[in-house]
Every structure is written in structure tokens, then in C-alpha cells.
Image (tube, rainbow, N blue to C red):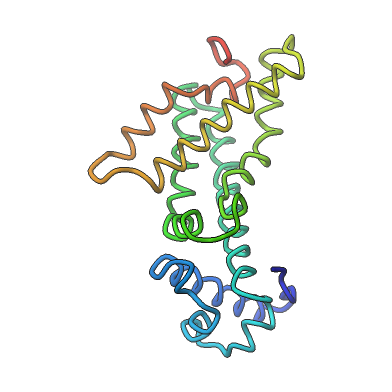
Length: 208
């Protein structure tokens, strides 16, 4: 399930994007089982040979979609964290969670299909990848605020706090019941999880 070739020219990159965009749309509309490389090629207006020039099979396309979603979410999160550090703590925490929810929601149809249908286990879910990349940022902020914590303390706090934040964001983004306000859920979630303790070195109150 590996990529066959890495695009090196603009035209190749555009072809890759067309294939991925078509796969994303079909995955959201049809689900994993009904999406095929032939349908992806037809939708992208390329030959099936072109699809296989860059991807070994359908699962390689799906993994590329997952990576693209994860990278986009991280770009948005890094920007949001930088902006939040100049805000009042509770406002900044809400800003970070909102950015995370919006980033996941923008890929919601694809992620829903991947989580429900794709036989890739944990690799169908972008949350572990985001958690891994955010871990060092949260660790630095936490140790700045609580320098007396042991490594085990830090690991346990990050494991519980980061995991809770990310999985709540996933639920708000793609499992939210009809008629329930996203903004209201985000505000409520901020009062339930220790986002300030994870990202704000001067945050008042106890850590987990």
C-alpha cells in the first residue's frame, strides 16, 4: 500500500491532487467498499494506468488522503496555538479546540467513511497522528508551568488530557447529533478538559 512515484513536476502534482480530490468525494458519497480505482480514475478524468502510476492500489490512495487530512489539521492547529498564546486563557483554549474541530470537520465525510469502513485499523483515523505531533508542544508548555513534575507525571497528564481533547474534537466534528450546536459543545468541552494546562504555561488552576 505504498505510493509508486513521488510527483516532481507541477503537472504530476496536479494529477495527484485530482486523483485524491476525486477519491475524497467518492469515499464520502459511496463509502470505502463502493469506491474503486476505476471509479476514481473516471471521476478524475484520467486513465486507470495514471492512477496506478502513482498508487499501488485503492488503500494507497486512502492512506494518502489520511496523510493530507492530518497535515492540513496540523497546519491549522499550529497557527491556532500561536494565536491563542496571546489570548486570555479560556478564550485561547476555546480557539484551539475550535480550530481542531473545524480541521477535522473539513474532512468529515472522508474521515467518517475511513473510520467506519476502511480495514486499516488505527491508521484510518488521523487522531493518533495529530496527537503524536502535538505531544512535544504540550510537553514543553506543561513542564514550563509545572517544573517539579516527574517524567511519569507528564506522560500520564498528556496521555489523558491530549487523548480526551482529541477524541472529544472528533466526536464534535463528525458524530455531533442533528440540531446540537457545535459552538455550544466546544464551549462545554473547554470546561471539561484541561486544554489550558496542556498549552498555557501560566494557566491558573491544577493540572490533571
